[in-house]
Length: 132
Image 1 (cartoon, one colour):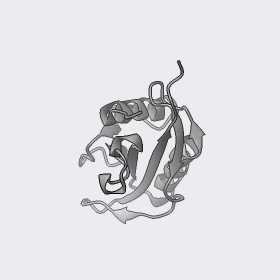
Image 2: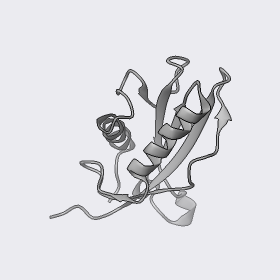
Image 3: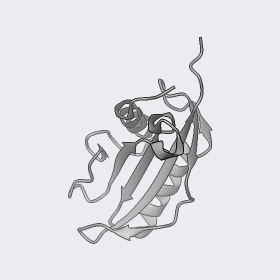
Image 4: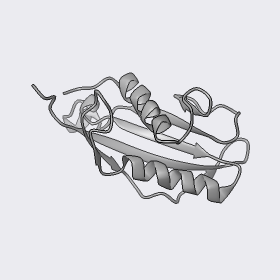
């Protein structure tokens, strides 16, 4: 069953906020990685597999989470926490049912435009049918 990426994004932000990652709108942002605050989390949602594979891209929605922090180790700790909250979990969001799988384990990082360590995580939802 196809899903709406806006719903995925918003519900994922609320889920992370409810689990101590931050506050939606203060240091958890949807579809943007603002210049400040320095320590923040950004969520970006999009469709999954390309239509060229014969799939509806909204049947496998994906979520990218970027964790930026001024200090490497605290950024990595938060990245590991986000990974544990989402990877290999079932039905963590209210209206998007299914299993969440990470594309890779935490550890990779790059420097943001402002030179701060930023840790990316990518997740794919395998949607399960809605209960009747």
